[in-house]
Image (cartoon, rainbow, N blue to C red; front, side):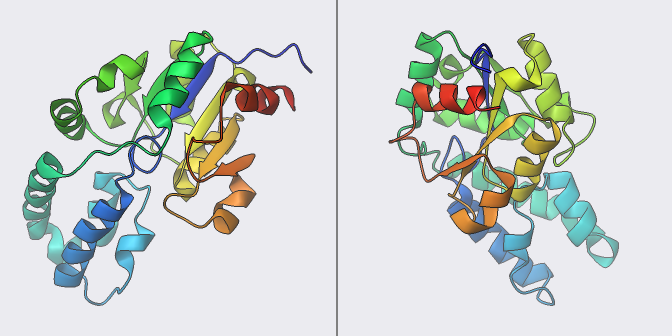
Length: 219
């Protein structure tokens, strides 16, 4: 099916555009040790979940009164964290766009988080044709809603899109949207995400437009 075109590349944010997962693991590790010592390692389980999901599932009940404190700490943390691109990302995106491919961020992060990104990462917006945040979706990952809405922005069908994800919820979301899925092994091991990915990469240094075309056309 070599007549399928490649119209849109849809990127999650943390662990896909930015190599921020180690920083978030450190932040949530500190909160979990303070408020959820009964759940060692919880900071690894919550990867890919929205802030609301994390609070509702793991910091509710007796801890509900602590939620505003955690959010305040998170907002302050994000104002000073480092937003470092995954290796090769900027060159990869520019190559896609030079070949007419639309690019979008599709993230569970909210507008407050994105404003922190815009303030600390000059030129970020120029890399993308659209930026969709949690406020744009009715249902969170692993539901396909976010990626379906992103493809609609570009009038693209599912088989014309590639999703780039690192978390299990995100990978499942791309799969559920019936799109090709590239798994980034920045957060989880290559072996663990392989069953949810059409291909797995560590970064974008050895992955380019031609690789995307082969993926799209291998249907």
